[in-house]
Image 1 (spheres, chains in turn red, yellow, orange):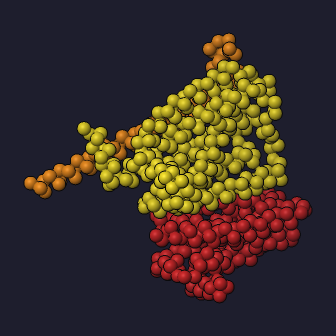
Image 2 (cartoon, chains in turn orange, red, purple):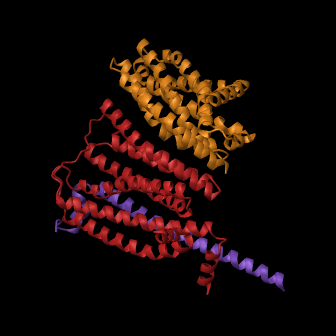
Image 3 (cartoon, chains in turn yellow, green, purple):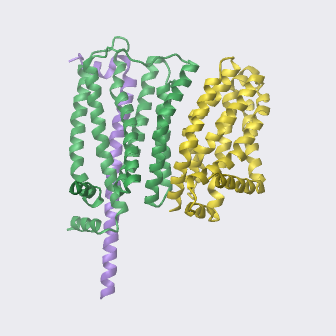
Amino acid sequence: MLDLLFAVIARDLKLALRRQADLVSALFFFIIVVSLFPLGVGPEMDMLRKMAPGVLWVAALLATMLTLPRLFGDDYRDGTLEQLVLAPQPLPVTVLGKMAAHWLTSGLPLTLLAPVLGLQFDLSADGLLVLTLALLVGTPSLSAIGAIGAALTLGLRGGGVLVSLLVLPLYIPVLIFGAGAVDAAVSGLGFEAHLSLLGALLAGSLFFAPWATAAALKISLE
Amino acid sequence: MNNRLINWFKFASPATFYPLAGKMIPWFVALSVVFGAAGLYLGMFVAPTDFQQGEGYRIIFIHVPASWMSMFIYLVMAFWAALGLAFNTRLSGMMATALAPTGALMAFLSLWTGALWGKPMWGTWWVWDARLTSELILLFLYIGFIALQSAIDDPRRADKAGAVLALVGVVNIPIIYFSVKWWNTLHQGASVSLTKSPSMAATMLWAMLLVALCFWMYSIAVALGRARNIMLERERHTEWVRQLLAGKES
Amino acid sequence: MHWNSASEFFAMGGYAFYVWGSFGVTALIMAVEPIIVARRRKNLLSRLKRQITAENLAQRSEES
């Protein structure tokens, strides 16, 4: 079981590294969206500091959104996905591996980049630390929940826009607790509760999302 | 036991359900009109003026029923979806598809009347209150469901994909509701309390319940009508549709 | 009866815009939705009938 998981992760990582342009463009999207906000609302540091958690988290959601069609899209086009679905190995485990690979190539780089962008918004050291922690715990949920949407919209016209319609409402709890953790840290309150709720969301989505995604993949490939 | 099972599946076939639904619709329309007339009479003519909100509070008689229905219809939709996935019946998917637009309209009505109520009472069209925000998210979930189904050409796939989405949504609704509620108490923005006075007069409660029943019957009638359309469209090549149309011609 | 006159009823104690705005849009939606469903049904029936007639004609011309 674990062998299968790691094999899928290794394969997807290898494929992703061959297409570095895709990875980098999602990251640049994140940077650009975050940098646009000060230009839109003005350079007052007080306001920016207040907005930072929300802006960074919403930008992270959108950047994850952009990478979702890639999660199953390439394998779907070249027929690999059909083989994976028909294979005797349990599909939810395969799907979990693909989610993990997706997180390693989208969520993790965002997490590492976020503190640097937080500096643009003059976040305190505490704020930066909690922002990184919250993204670290929260972004895997985004990959897991997003996979359901990606599987449902496989091969449909306008799949990219459709995925955001389906998935963004489901991302709201992660957004609330993720941005809430940073908010709490910046204003000197306890942020542990937010982080543990993010952890609970992660546990829940890692448990349920592989099954739902596997069911959705079977439906889409019928 | 076995006989009864077969009977149920007989009604699950479109060929038998189509005429049955056709017969049921007028009854539900009639019930809806009766309940609506009674509820509005109680609400608009009998119920006394609220001592705090004047006559403006009368919006409650459609606002609350619409909110109830918007949530209830989503649950019913998820129920049909689960049934469709479990037993692979054609009818379940059709019912879920038929319910979605009505549910979305109820969610919209709830938001619309809520805004028109909020403006005179709190001085603003919209507050980021937990209930309003969750209702908005519920509307988004309906829109996602409708968009997904209309993007898929194959009806079988549309049914099943919609069913998975509806079930994922129904698992998420409580999580979304509690997270929004928590978020709201943390931010304490407008500090507008939505809780009504607990001593709501019995007439008001009755009026609200009657209008809710009216909306319920209306939703069933419209959903059945829409389900009939979907059946005709999807089964147009089958024998029973041909016979039906031939019968209509003569 | 709670109201003294019709005009008082329609004024809704100064909340006419909000109350009638809510009830009006609700009534509008609940009138338009069934009409849309009914019209869709009419179009569907006439289209399917035309299809069947066309198929019957094609069959007949093949036989003759």
